[in-house]
Length: 221
Image: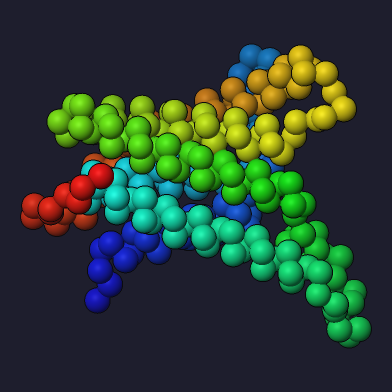
């Protein structure tokens, strides 16, 4: 029998691994005015990570949620280290023809990997902090508001940190970089916020399921 919290941790790690391994694929999302919206496929996974985090904070407290986030951070870091090692190891001559495809899939640049990891750390811990603070201030009421408010803030941090670290051009003027980055951060953040709102019922379902109709002692934040 799988324990509920173990399942949530497994789901969380699945989201982290999926975002790291598959997030590089860019897909079209549509057009809003002059904005042509595109995003990596990880955009569908990231709101799930924040949902799981908020559910754990709601039921078990910020301390337990931070422990889960640390597990995700360590997993992502180990993945980056091992993929870097794997892509640099020599290939057997019999399989040399596959090496270019292997490196194309797993050989993301160190800059992109570092940007992704930094954004993950900043946004996930910020989400736990904001959600926990709002929970204390609102006395555990308005779960929908606390969930979306923390998600909006943390996903803005995620998009800003990742896109800035990954695509800031040192050979371009500051104003040009700001204009370019703002043009991709805002629509990217907008789509994530929309997905967060759509997934709000999952937070209520997750909290009810994790509690299992019984009171759960809340750890100190």
